Length: 491
Image (tube, rainbow, N blue to C red; front, side):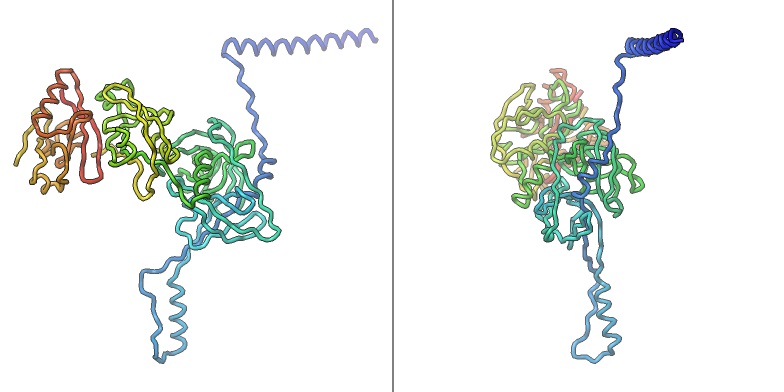
């Protein structure tokens, strides 16, 4: 009997081993046919993390008092009026003042009561109240606010015996697309709400400001989540929830957070100075299109094209000119135009940095001393793509040019010190018109001496044609604000 049992056990073991062999063989065959076996994706349990950090996330309630435009009714002096009418007038004066409330989120970064939220959450607020998870409500003061990055720093005075737990920032630079993230906030005024998702994309530009560099996530973010923290799986704050894209007002899986690396720099300045102190270069820039790259003789359309240089400015003192293309700033490669304003803004004021530019097909290094940006002025103007006697018509180009004369200055409201030629007429069917050139524009040729007369322009065009160049880059100025570089066909 024992021998039979032993035989049965041996047979079963053989079958089990054979089964394991078959599974292993299948796995190996799959690897050979399809490549490596996909790694197992483990969904993290956020319960411990949420429990550890949720009490450090707060609700922000703001109140703004608005008055009607109508002049409030006043009670006549030295006149006897019925008491009921007097009561009605006093009540009416109170009615004319309207109070508007809004809700948002925030989080504690210092046990002494320093709290972070979005600038748009507290914008225009007459009163700000911070509501903690245990129900305690405290009035908050604004230490500093920066609308360009949508960050605000608040300060409350904790009650006696109240203990605040500060959250720690992590590095958003370490984030990868696909990493798990956790969002906590106050959606629709419901109070502390936890949602989870992944990083959907990095470095998003949503045209919210000049320094857009958002983390995109599919963690559910709704109205009221603004100003709340976005955590990594270590419990570190790697973003500040700031915006959503939605057709309904609710979450559709596209939310945006300010990267912690950006936030930490801004928060530090707001804490220290009550304001931001950004670097200033003093240039206007635009995108390097494929046609502009061809016109400049560039191998690719990377970099930021200088459309104009303020004078005086750090750029002008360093010898940077319109038509130059910045491809590197302080060791950071500039692949796209929008990257330059962010890098310049983060540069320490007074520091000397190396700037690599491309001019006439050659790479030139410039040494620039960065000044402080006047926040009331535009730092780097990001120009839009859209740019309307004694004249001479330029055959095949479809427009007329004139010297800057007194009649041209009066007609087009130009500066007497304007340098270049004035477009005194243009055909609506010309290539130059379709690309944006308009009557009244003042033009020069990029990387060429200022135009003094029409003959000089014609000679330059002829020279380009002899070199078999099909495009010419024009430096165009319109009014006092619009300056742009764009290509026109000359063949």
